[in-house]
Length: 305
Image 1 (cartoon, rainbow, N blue to C red):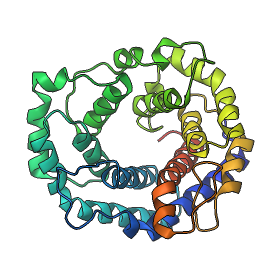
Image 2 (tube, rainbow, N blue to C red; image 1 turned 180 degrees about the vertical axis):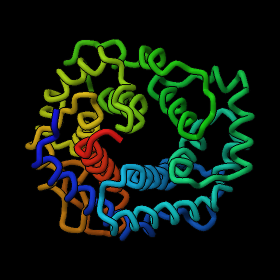
Image 3 (cartoon, one colour; image 1 turned 90 degrees about the horizontal axis):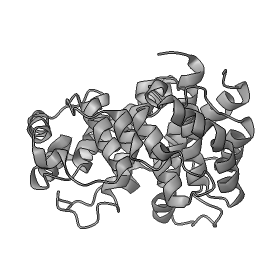
Image 4 (cartoon, helix red, strand yellow; image 1 turned 60 degrees about the vertical axis):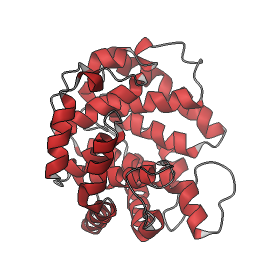
């Protein structure tokens, strides 16, 4: 299927403006000066900073935005790398917390763009050989996340991605109406990790691809109706990552029309706070997802890599 021209037009606008917003507001997402690897609340700044890194890495990987945006993406990568003390903080967190997977997942986007930390490489290689790591109890979609990060970093994780997919909600191909907000997020990430964020659509087993292709339009309609724009944007990435992409112009244009002139995309239908820091905290994730959605769709429209 060819991705329609209205979708590529909306995707380019969405990705360009989202990346500009992330770059312009990057200082609002910086780590507090006294942050250590034992941070009490990783979700407050550490995780969002990693999400910005992921978006920038995928824009650079896909290479389908304009030269100015690629420069902005590279600048974001440099900024987040410095925030993590050029990998030292990620290394120290993994060293202290052996069974945690977030340091590996945080490192993978950097590796995708050529950033390496020698000590962390050695530590992750050692960790990958540990029985306890191979049997840590994770939610099925989280196990896929760790396996894909290991694949990106170049570690031989020895796990069959299709087998891992079979343990997820999506892998069961359940009743499509029996889906809630958190399950929908888990489903999107199952697709993301199996396809490495749209780079390998064939990584999604054919029976799962057919199931998602059938029900994705319904799920998008549901969350568009209730104004859950963060989840809608994630579902757009899913559609663009399928072997036979599902990219309905009206869905993409809905997000493009919601996007503010400066690039912000609201996470839901609630009013947007005027305070710059609160705006960043509330909506940074949705802007990240929008940048990724636009980049993946443009890359699929450009043809095989």
